[in-house]
Image 1 (tube, rainbow, N blue to C red):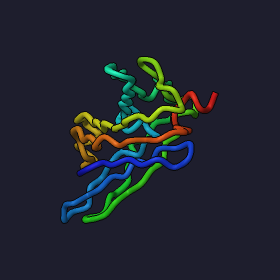
Image 2 (cartoon, rainbow, N blue to C red):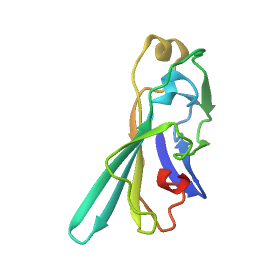
Image 3 (cartoon, rainbow, N blue to C red):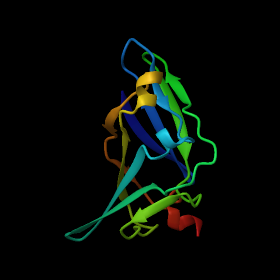
Length: 145
């Protein structure tokens, strides 16, 4: 399993790529198993200094939680959009300026649990390549305030 990212207006698209000859299941992002899986790393360079920012989902109280998943078809892709400005993301570090280029990657991590074993869902860590984002970076959480 591989992961890529792209930018679409105020959202980031996560693209799960399955190069194998079998379908792969991944958790949907709307349950506790998938909620904490994506984490974004953002780098901005100014002169000789590079600053790093981490954006990850905030803790939530689940009132109803079902281990739902999607299938990424063999040799296929599955795309899902996330909005870092929807109020459900925590920022560690200082957000970069909206009018400066940045580099971004996503790290997707799923721990092995009884549910992942039962539903035969992908476990492990995958990282996208670094992707350069040119201004205006309307997908940054600060752009939504």
